[in-house]
Amino acid sequence: WRSGNTDPFPWKFICLYVAVNIIWFYFLVSNNGSHSDPKSFMYIMEFRLSHHFFASYFGMIHLVLSCIFALTCFWFYSGKLRWMFVMIVAGCLFYELGVEILRLPIVLYTQWWKTTIWLEAFAFIAIVTQVEKNDLIQTVSKNIGILLPVGLFAIVCYYRLSGLFGNKPDYMFPWYYSPSEDVVISRLAQQKTPDDAVFIIPPDLTAFRWYSRRSQYVDYKAMIHTETFLKEWYFRIGSIYDYDLASKRFGVNFSDHADTMLSSPSPRVIQNWKSHGITHIISPKTNLIGLMLISSTSHYCLYQIP
Image (cartoon, rainbow, N blue to C red; front, top):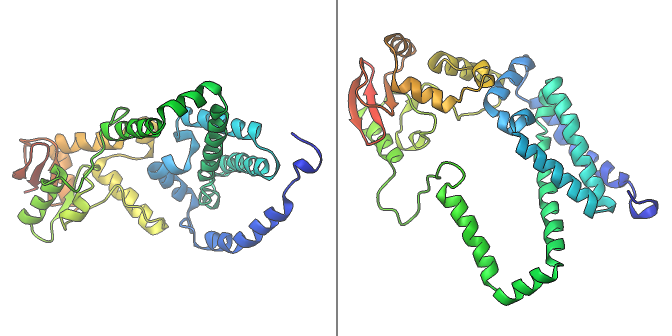
């Protein structure tokens, strides 16, 4: 840390920030979705949106990278910028206390971990600045010229489009003339089922929400942060897919679990679905016993519950 006037505490800017945001904070407190049952609210938020709000679910590599970014910023910056990084890191520590230990919805709604994007941005600026000072790097960049940014762009494109480090993304490019299977099965659902049909589908079949024009009993990706909706939504997830926060904490992946249920439902499960008013399902498997096959693609089958 530097002493003297080179690194003053920016109290004027902090007071201005608090004054401007106090109104926003008031409405946040008044209109947050927990209402009368904050314990259940936090339980459901952990169940569905842990990857946004709970650092314990981020993964160790991401937390380590955040620490590296923070240390980089502390090392290379001074003055008011350094105080901003101090506030970001201190805020994350208080956020973790409020969310993961005290379980306070109002703290969760600040989404303080998103401020770490500034750590990442300024850390990369500092690192690139130091790299550019290297004589070898300067010589190479001058010799290859435009090829350097073009090469970096190609690497990023390959990484994003190939699925090298995960599942290949489902891109719908303008020059594609045939729709994806997700769109095809969704349109078949619209064409071959009545308007009042009620579906359960694989959670990752996102095209269904738009192209089918049909109702789902529960949509895993639907999120309205109000207590009434969340409790009903959580109840429906559990009653249809037999999955809850305990399952998640145990390490069961919801998408895999749901696909397994839709691929081999027992007569008891089918009867349970029917008792909830479900009339149709989309399954990744053919020849399901006890269901009527209506239509199919190479990866999806549309069934009616008799």
